[in-house]
Image (tube, rainbow, N blue to C red):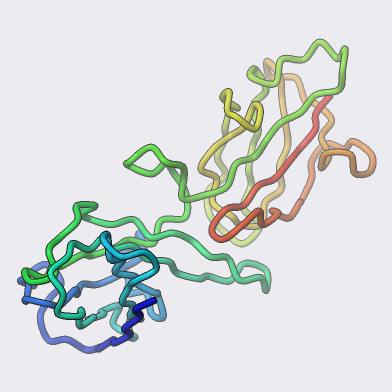
Length: 224
């Protein structure tokens, strides 16, 4: 394994004006409002050698700078950031402004955005969680026709989502991992809702998301 870690914050160049330097990966991480994201981890993955990488961490201004080993290979940049929801640390993949690999001797500028919801541009998944919707056997309810309403408990506008077919079952995809009050309707008619196989049905639930693995969260609900 080859691992090199170097980060430098406070670079004077504006992120949009940065130019590539040989043997350097650099850039900036911001949230969806354009605010800098500190302590995000950026990884430059060596595409030739297994488990060979360089990494760095953003400073308070969201900037990072990683010096790469002087070996003639191509690299791919990725990143993760951690935010706190109800006291729990939620790890999220960062959205790159450029997904292309780059040659180490040319260097690269790769900026990232911390997105908490929505689908990834490459179609490999989402930046949020999947909310899987189940219905009791013989209920006659098509989960693909159910509408969920999400009311953020920590501020923000309510929104609605309708499940689509996924490998995990009918699910609303790309939901930001936050605290919600969630209710369900079918054709405008209120449905009972609960966390799957937990407790009684009610008019709404205020559940917690379950971490499946790094940056992957899920919530399973049942309606009738």
